[in-house]
Length: 114
Length: 111
Image (cartoon, rainbow over all chains, first blue to last red):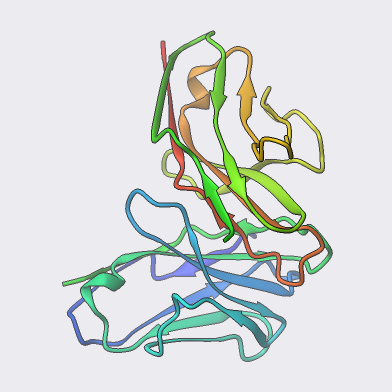
């Protein structure tokens, strides 16, 4: 499968712990996006990278969240001091940077904070 | 404010019946509109986009700027159309391409 992959697929953690998720985009895609989806809602934009540069962050992304894409390939999303409200599906998508490039989504990482 | 509204959480129809999934948006600039679909146990995937003006799996959607709508239509629903459908928008020629999604509509096609 050469699509977008995410790891882990599921994560259960206790409140206050740190968690890190990984996203591997489609290899030739230079844009990478993170979204969060809670139950009954559509995905909400969190942040976006073009190559290794993080170019936009949503106001939803509190200081406890940090994302990196160090070599312009895979990306990590870290949540520090997790809270129960962080429980959600975290989706990664990638695309080419041409205007209107289709975003291809990964399977998501489901986080449950106890 | 940029917003996408899908007023129906669930739409249930019988096989062969016409389907219309509603989507309304508010956006101050020139939007690009999309429909994404998520079948059971599969990832989110693009169904169609308004600039392509194409029909995918028998579905069509027309952008109505006057009514700020982008409803998804299919004349004869099939059981395999059962899925979650999300309407989304982004800015035409935008720098980021980030998507703003609606809440989604579950389409249930009964035999």
